[in-house]
Length: 107
Image 1 (tube, rainbow, N blue to C red):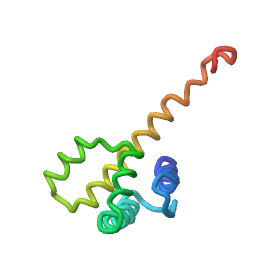
Image 2 (cartoon, rainbow, N blue to C red):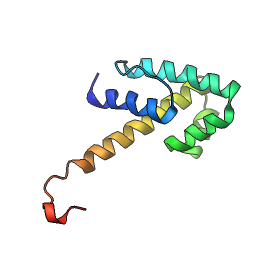
Image 3 (cartoon, rainbow, N blue to C red):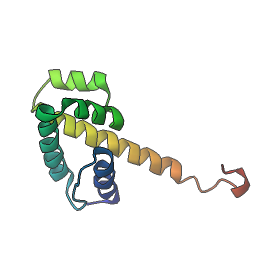
Image 4 (cartoon, rainbow, N blue to C red):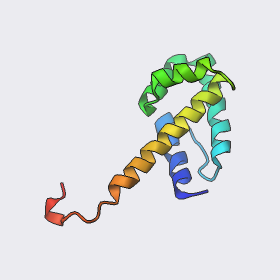
């Protein structure tokens, strides 16, 4: 497990307001997240929509992936949430590493 995966579990726990164990592989996180999404699909679809929006999953891409359904909908959504969060983590890392900016020019 690398640092991004550990950060991912922590961020998903916060964004989704659930407890996800931090020391899990991406596949294990996907299974746990898929089960949670499946539960939300049947018990609280509004909360699921809110989560997808909060995590910033592309509605257009989600619809396309669901139409090409090779796996169940909850697994597709779980993978999309994981992919999006990893994107955000990598983007933050890329822009956080700008240590060559003079102290008086930083915001």
